[in-house]
Length: 115
Length: 151
Image (cartoon, rainbow over all chains, first blue to last red; front, top):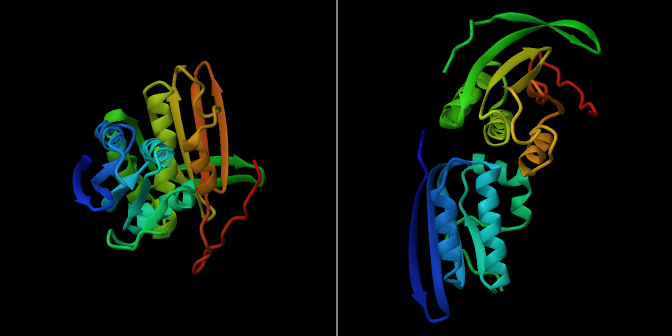
């Protein structure tokens, strides 16, 4: 099992906090760390919350559901979430689930914020 | 994990009459082996001639079904995959009643299964639940894509 590794980095900018959550490995219903970290970081209301998926090799509906929950919370607080550089496999899963229509997907973390 | 007798053949009774199917995967799974199951499904789908892009969808759909058996069903189950006439069938079952009739209650995961597969059939009863998802793929050399059928 490629256990999911979750790491968080934050940057304080003039216009607020930018949080990057980096996921490496596989995320599924047996992954506990994801929900805990998402909930804790979303509660801090960063201006921009990026989920770096470049190291993510699989994600199932249970793990996607946790991301949707965090997205809903962030949106309600006026914060922006984006998914960053998913692999081709994860991109296909995002398409199949329709999540790419709900949450913004960016090619890289340095992409411009949409205004 | 168990491994199938290579190339074991079974008779499949379908609407078009009997046809012969070749079992390409026969695995038991529980919460601890879901990741291994995904690896096995991807390898078996590739061996069965499923294109890489389609194999991703097969792997995701089978995982969702197995995850439902683990979470809502008996807690463990069995996957049998067989190929017949250019399609791949994936049958996920569990033995015994779980807390919820998992193939029947619609959730996000089953929605993905329906989006990925060409055909999905499900049954649930006191002896357990069973879902079969059938996958075709775009025609390649010497292979025809089965038509999409309504369930």
